[in-house]
Structures are given as structure tokens and as C-alpha cells.
Image (cartoon, rainbow, N blue to C red; front, side, top):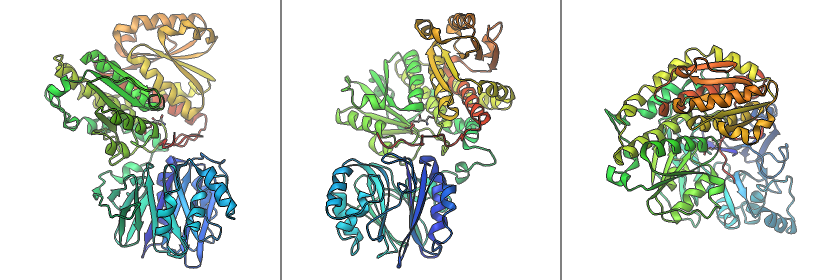
Length: 604
Ligand code: M6R
């Protein structure tokens, strides 16, 4: 939540770099934005409620040549989205500016203390206590020292950047849980919430760790802990292709990311099968160690949780190992009962979801091995977990997760197959077949006109019910989330057999029901449920394996060419994504930046 950027250079002015970085980070929050530039005459700030375009309209009289500045794109936590609450925030004299991502939990107490000392506040945010604390601790003379002293007073999970007009050639950064990375240029350096902010300028980067403070100038990056002891961080080369983080001719990132799936599935599977065997060396487990796994506990949020639900079914079905999947925000406070032989798997596209990270911390504290399935190299979960398996989906910019979800499914499928083999239940047929999944995906995407036409009709709905059994129920859960989050149509997912235990009462003439049928062994039962809702007037839209489509009592049918049922979810999911996408487009909604949401949920 919230994106922060900083730039210090000599030859280039900061403003265009900050705006470009903010544009690339806008997916992290977009209810207001702002920039601050350091000049010897003082800090120049512009900020505005609304998207970046609103800020751009306010930049007219800024000192455009200033070579050092910070910027912010906001997802509101404390205080409504207004011009006043937008970052950067200043101290009483306009000498110090800060941008911040995360939450200062003790801000009320600090604010009162600062008010008592005579400080004047201009916003309702928790952030504003930082510049005033810095002022109190002498930032006018020595920003670095003041940051060290002020940081000791803050409680919470956050990252912030501080800039002073008295030292206009440096930005001071602190990381305490919320992500922060440094980009290394030539005669210029960058700070940002994630790499995508500066990938077009440099691929050399360092990831700051919790408790790190960085003093960044055009020619140096000095990292210390908060006591001032030097810390050394590896310089990484980020191999994401910057074009992947651009729209590339598509009207929306979401459509581009949906269409990229067959290709990124190829990347995800590359080198991970060898003949009839699954090879995932990143797991760091020999077959005998895999055999020692008695239970799997998945923790995740949102779409990643739905991927975990698919993983559960596959691991239990193929390897006969029990799996529990928990929503991270519940698990962390549930006093979980874990047993010896439990492997804890955190699934997270961003690797920064606060609740998921808390679960990893909890599992570690309880002494259980933690594995991360994530997309983002260097993200916090990669450093907190014992082992990491990357999904290789490339940057996912649209708030609605698509390619990250299907690659999570593929990784969990590979894991299920590896575990099954270790447990003496190898499935060479599935290992061979999984290599065909990218082609099946490409085949589906070659002709999507029918899906587009159906989505336009679904877009007129007030409520939509999704139903399925087994894997199809897990898919239904993702389908309903996708349509809700970008088209704002109310949607619910039900295990098909569960409808008649209450929800059937809501079905009336014309109620749209999306039925998913990719599991041949369960199809007959789902067909009965289709008949039940049709008998009450529902209009049924079936997403169905072509082999099951004949005589299906549905009003609209999207037939799919699928591999074995265990490998169907990734392909079938694309139909649900496209339905949601075109429904939102047809309603004129802001597909990539849906209201109230942000890409990474880095606060509780
Ligand atoms: O980065 P993560 O995978 O941990 O994010 C988890 C959820 O916030 C995320 O999947 C969210 O539900 C998506 N916006 C759904 O499309």
C-alpha cells in the first residue's frame, strides 16, 4: 500500500524521474499523490487528491531543475483522501519533507506530545508526526542524526524517506517492515517501494532489510543499522524486462497480463520437469525429506488464498498428504495447532502482504520450516522464509491478480506431483501433460470473442452466483472475487451442493449463475445443481470441459479444451478472468485501478 520514490542525481532533474517512478508504482495506491523537491531556498511541494494526472496538473511553477526529491502515491489508511492528507508532509518550517508507507501505530500519542511542544499539524495522517519529530530532534542541522533519534520513537511497520532543504543532495531512508529498495545508477541513485519504479533506468539494485537506514547521494549509498553500524547488502541484477511492466499496446495491464499467461506458464515450468519427474531444486528437499512431510499448512490472502485452495485439493488427491489452507489474517491470530512434519507454505505474489509475512514469522517462531511461493525477487517473504520457489510470472501491475494466480497454481501442482512421487504415488502422465498446459492456454486465447460477448451480457447483472465442485469450487471462488473487485457487481461462490442449504432462496427469474465443470467425476452432480437453479429461473453460464458440454442444460456454454482435470484450473481460470475483465470494461470501470484497493496490502 502506498508507493514511495526518491531520486538524487547530478545531471538529471529529479521531477521527471519521480513522476515516472510514481506512474509505475501507482498500482500500490492511487487516491492522491505528491512530490517534494529540495532546493537551497526550501522544500517545494505539490500534492493533489486523485490520480497522478491530478498532480501533474499542479506542477507548473516547480523548480524543475532540482536534482533531489521524493514522491508518494497514496492508499489512505489514516485520514480521507484529500489534498491535505496527501504526502509529502512537512515540518512546521517547511525545511523537512517525508513520504511514508505503512502505519505509525503510536501516532496519536506522538502527535499530542508534539502539539504540546507547539508543533502545528496540517493533516489527519499518522505520517505527519515524522517530519515534526525530525524537526524536534534537530534535523535542521543534521538530518541523519535526527532520523536515528526519531525512529526510536516510532512503533509500527513502515518505510519512510526524509529530505531536508539544508542538505539538498541526499535522501535518508528507513525500512521497518514495509518494503524499500535502492536503485544504483551512474551519478544518480534511486529509492522506491519496488524495483519497477526505476527498472527503465537501472537494473542494479539493493534490497534494504528491516532496521536498515540508507543515506543516498548521487554518488554513494551508505547503509547502516539504526545505531549507525555499517551494513552490507548484496547488489542484485533485476532481470525483469522493463517492457513487461508496460502496457505494450493493450488498453489495460489486466488484459495484457491475462494474454501473457501461456508464455509465463512456459517460464514457470521451464526446467522444472525432466522426463517423467518434477525437479524443483529450490525446495531444497531430497525425495526422502519430501517423504517426511506429514502435513502442509498454506497461508495466503485473496487470490493467493484461492490458489492455495487448488493446491490443497491437488496435494491431498495426488500425494494423500493432508493440507490446511488459512487466510493469513485469521491464521496469525488463531493460535494454530501445528504438528511435527508440517511444512508451512506462504503464497504471495508481492511477497509483501503484511498478514502473510506475520504468518511466516509465527511459523518460524514455532520452529516450522517455511516455504515461500512468490513472484517478486528480493521481496520480504523471500528473506523471511527458509526456501523460495519463484512463480516467474514477471511484473504484475493490474490490481486484479491473473498471471500470478495461475503460476501459483502451476507451482503448487508441481509441488503436489513431487510430493506424490516421494510418497510412492508418481504420476508420470501428469508430469508429461503439464508441459502441454501453455499450449492449451494459447489455444484458448486465440479465440475469445465468445467470452467477450457473454461478459457484456453478464455486465448487466446486479448479483452473480458462481458454483462448482472440487477444483471447480475453488475456481468459482476466484471467479467471484475477480468480477467483484473490478466490476463492482455483487458475486458469491458456492460449493454447488451447498446452494440448496439456503442460498437457493436468492435465485429468481433471470439470476445469473456461472457453473464451472472441469471435473468429469463430479460433473453429473453439478448438472443436477444446474437443473435445480434453472428450475427456479436462473440463467446459467457454463464454463465447461468440451468433453462434458454435450446436452448440458445451460443457457450459455463456453467449451474448453483441457488436459487432465488436475491440470485444468489454470486454463479454466483465464475464462473467469476474461469474463470479469470485459464485464468491467463494458461497465466503464477503471479496470487496472479499482476503487478502494491497492496491489500490495502491506498493512493489517
Ligand atoms: O501479493 P499477494 O499475493 O500476497 O496479495 C494477496 C491479495 O492481496 C491479492 O491476491 C488480491 O486479492 C488481489 N487483488 C486479487 O486480485
